[in-house]
Image (cartoon, rainbow, N blue to C red):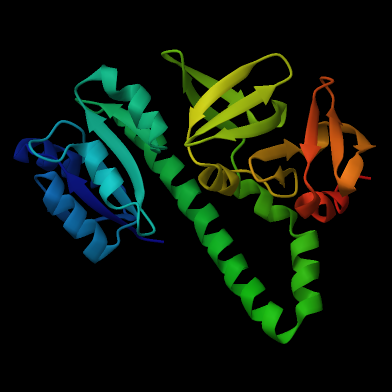
Length: 265
């Protein structure tokens, strides 16, 4: 698989240096170089690359503005390349594959390319599975359901760790330890057994990162880890409460009751 790549940096020497460092990687093809954010957004939307090496500090649109500017399309993978360590937290918030300091270390670049290969392979597997599931749902609905029930391999595309910036620090949260998640506008409150953290992300985006066989929405603003449920308590009007391992109780609204019933027995 060829990794179609765009390099973005306002310094020509930096672009040339990255091109030289990427030459040993036969599967990486540099299809375009850009020297400012506007050029980068235009090139990404037109060429639809797999990967973008992106400088952060540039005149006009900086690297984070570039990421924001292409969110309406299926975005590529981003690797931030910069001389400034203080941008690391925002880079992780932008879900970058990696954050490389200038001058780029050869070993860290090799590790980054390996991460990119893995992420692209997972994405390709996921896309092919979704395409097949769509075809089966039209011509063989029962087979599509069997695929949904038995496809354990798709679990690999979901997050095992989530980086959460809270109180000026980055916390690496193991997904299995999350009990439930509550929405508060554009923020998510993530609850583990002994802690709570604030993540700036929409519920829709966070749901895409979590395995739906384990994490299910039980209310318009609540997601629960079904592996952490130890009891179901009936309530009035067809509603119920889930009692979690920590003792916390989460309300299940009527519109989501049937969804949860398929998983919790």
